[in-house]
Amino acid sequence: MEQHNLGKNKSIKGFLPSVMVYKEEFETRVEARAREKYFKSGIGREYLKSILDD
Image (cartoon, rainbow, N blue to C red; front, side):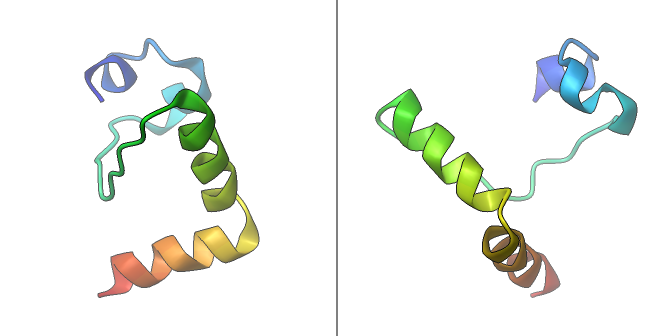
């Protein structure tokens, strides 16, 4: 998060500052990337939205 908020990540540089609202940890990078892909899908975005609405 610190690197993101310092503007060192180009993908979110225009949306600073960021606030972490959800976190999961994974054993491998492959598992983490698969979960990130899910969250960027329609059903994954709905899941995150339902968490934030609580």
